[in-house]
Length: 210
Image: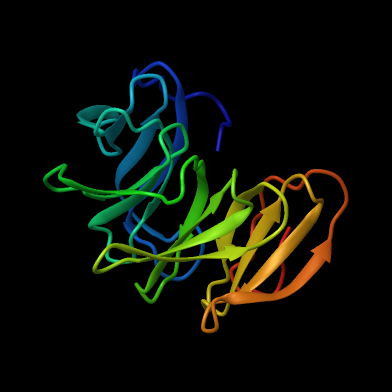
């Protein structure tokens, strides 16, 4: 309420992507449980685990090297994280309790996995491939690569609507948004947006994207 800085928490060198613990059901921010905050550190290739009750970083989870962490998304059950290795062309599924990971090399090389999102039904993890101008589709369990969907040039951000019907893809260099039908796994519509769309926020009812 005071809008003042409450505390600085020392985590690492190059912090990038905060993800709240809890369920990823309902909306893009999920349903946080108020217990944990996970923060990726691009500089040292780790995930910091912050206890939100104490304001202290309690764990550091190291990603396999080389990985080049960029972005992470919480699985719907809150037990796993799906992460993209932009600098290595790899994608992984991380078990938060143990730190164990499954790694997939994205074919064909070179690849640059970027911002992704998970559907709330627990079926898919989808992320952009900057070099291929595609959206990559992975199954969540078992974790495996399924296919690539051609989208606009150099896709960046990906967001599912809360009802999981649509995936919005920000096509950074083609100045468009590609809208993917989740059930059919193909582009349903392409919307011109103007220069350089990077990120988006979908409202809780899934009617609007900003």
